[in-house]
Length: 175
Image 1: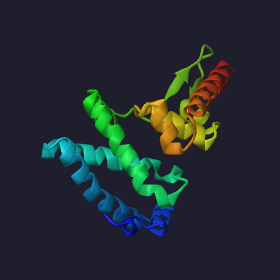
Image 2 (image 1 turned 30 degrees about the vertical axis):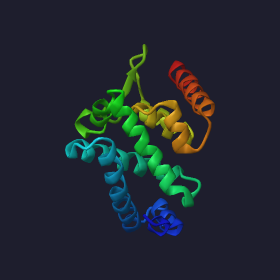
Image 3 (image 1 turned 135 degrees about the vertical axis):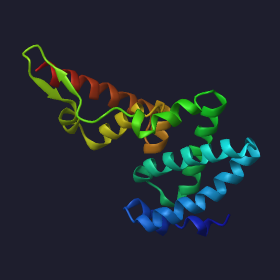
Image 4 (image 1 turned 120 degrees about the vertical axis):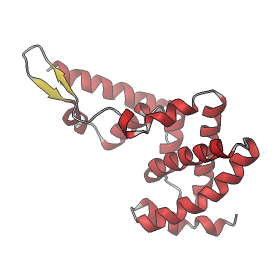
């Protein structure tokens, strides 16, 4: 597939929220992914599942992509992570985590000893957007290495962000 299929300008428009650009980009990518997974797996139903999970992974990580000209490499790395998850027997577990009925409901509350409740969503709003994004990806089953690749930061930085976020949340709930 020619590099022009993943034109950096198209990627930038998709990244900025242009729905049409994003749909074109993901549709073009699905053709590449189908060939990739068919060569590796063969089973069409499984190929379709892996394509959808990869597209979801690319869609959710697109905002953090720093180099639009490297979109195809970014997407193929996501495909490779999905393939590894499949081979390790983790594929179906991650796939289920994206089903809306299985995701935890919003507005959790933690009861405190005084009888009050603290809204976890409000507490999460106190975190930086990047830190919240890391926690969301962890909640959806992504490994530290995968998150680091999606956000173009080091694995150590991801671990530190998670550690600091939990320390901050612990302080918030302790107060």
